[in-house]
Length: 428
Ligand code: NIG
Ligand code: FE
Image (cartoon, rainbow, N blue to C red; front, side, top):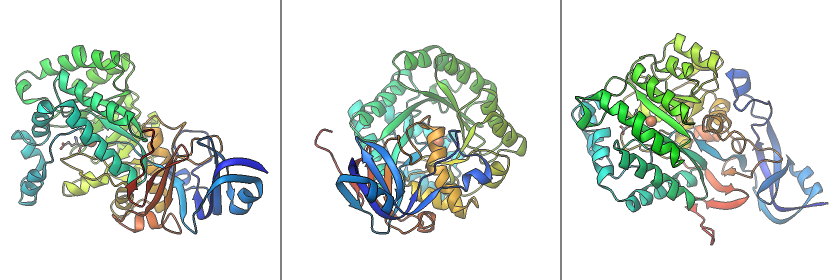
């Protein structure tokens, strides 16, 4: 018998998402292939998975100090939220109410609300206040099974406030068990004081913000919102290429309300991912597939803004893309940290299969976040980032729309969440 620190036993399914060499699973065949072990277990030693197999195999091979009896529950890789905006200082429930009464999202933005309203609040906020906000949001992600997330700045829109936002993410993440990848989104919109000098703002982003972000190693990715009311394709290209020269990988918020060529730009600059892609036309989809750019679809944002545009997941998958799903957690268009709900919307709004949505919040989301080596699948040698679902099969995950089915969450083999509560370790 070999010895392990922890054995998880008696799971009705272990959904491994293993197999294949590429970081992400592309197209329908791969995305529907979850590699499930029935009546399974996992052995963990020093925070790493050392074996995965049937409960019989695990109990006859390993002696474990601790055991978790899963009693017919389902083990999945910890979820990865590939797109979030968690640094803001004030909720925007007032704008939601205005939209319910008939106002349009873009009208509110053009009138100085929306992202501009968030920017006013973030500029005034102390770093500590922002850190507390981010920490609380990471906690809510964690109890919903999210073990890693991408997190953007983008509500500062001045050099100091953008740096402050990225520092807030870094500080909150340093004290939190989740892994958090930071994205600089200084080019979210042109701030109000630059309305008559767009060129001046693009220059500020390129010449002042990006070099400081890179020098202080505050972000791994650079994102730009390409949309009417935000940035044009040529402006975005200049910013993304400047970021790339400084070592920041491009991401693009593209085609949320109309196709302005953002997806094609993402392919051209070899972005790791393209976000939203609600209105992307077929030619853009083909370009994404050819360039291996991962579309990160955000159905909760489509739903929350009134379903005027819904991404065509079926066409993207048919083109051979590796589709991911994320919450787009933000105060304007998607105030939810619940990735299980997003998976559910992936099925009901985007016609994805339960297998595809599970792939889209685990392995493909990890690839879109630059975490393919450590997250998104269950296999020997990988860190033990695991979710145990209080249900007998993964099909319950999208089926139970909005319900938190997460029983326990483990990061590096340590219990970090238990039935909706964060478990704090004494060292953190
Ligand atoms: O991803 N599209 C741009 N940014 C966010 C929304 C920002 C906001 O309204 O605060 C999004 O939907
Ligand atoms: Fe977003």
